Amino acid sequence: MLSLTIDEALHRASFSLKKASIDDPLIEAEILLAFILKTDRLQLYLKKQDLLPRALYNSFLGLVKRRVKGEPVAYITGQKYFYGRLFRVDRRVLIPRPETELVIEKSLHFAEILIKSGVSKPYILDLGTGSGVLAVTLGLELPDAELYAVDLSPEALDLARLNAKEYRINEKITWLEGDYFDVLTDRAPGATFNLIVANPPYLSADEIKNLPPGIQEYEPVEALYGGLDGLDGYRQIIGRLPPYVKTPFMLIFEIGSSQEMEVKKLLEDSGLFSEICCYPDLAGLPRVVEAFIP
Ligand code: GLN
Image (cartoon, rainbow, N blue to C red; front, side, top):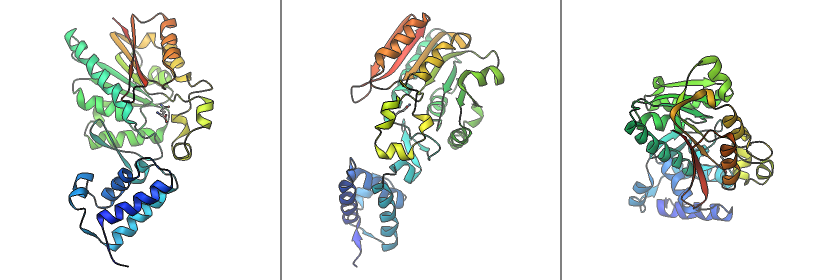
């Protein structure tokens, strides 16, 4: 068989992905081929008419087959961009979603408010850090902050540390393995924080049953399932918050798009906060809730 050009290979792959009902088939084909060629999608466009060596085409077809079977692209390539930086991901952790970048934006905005109120070294805690994208990004964006990151999964923490090492901020983050606040009480007694961020597992029992196959079969269910109604993580965090607060304080949660009312109610009922706001993601869905204590 004659060699194919990059453009032809992309179109063939895109056709197979489309047949498998994958959204954005051409983009996904481009990401996979760029990965094989150790380049990026822009370079791929510039080389569209170049011939693709047979061995590389075969490797590319292998990856496309995995994608057709449902494996997410980020697990196939082992990487995912978050807030403009590349992170390692694998099946030990949830793949970072673009909407989670809104947690970073709101955190950075709050850090500016802290500086204006004289707090130049904010204490920040990331509960359920997973791949570490929130802790590492905040550490890089806020070089003066003191960071703590907690996760129940030792495997996830290993990967988070690896990500932190690649950005040379592993030493700056205190990594704690265990259940949210229990591990803080044991390993960092007396620690208090100006900012707590969390993207807890928030899918309900019904939502877990109806997940698309790519998520259901490949992503860790512990990072997704938030109890019968999906709200266990929020209840647990809000219920145990007071001893860990250093004012001025902000709690920033990612939420499921149908949870705005319930999460706001949990926050209101705690009687701890003077302001509670919810912000939409780029799709216009409620996604991030923040709650402030002056
Ligand atoms: N956004 C993820 C999903 O819908 C859920 C993330 C989470 O539970 N924290 O698949």
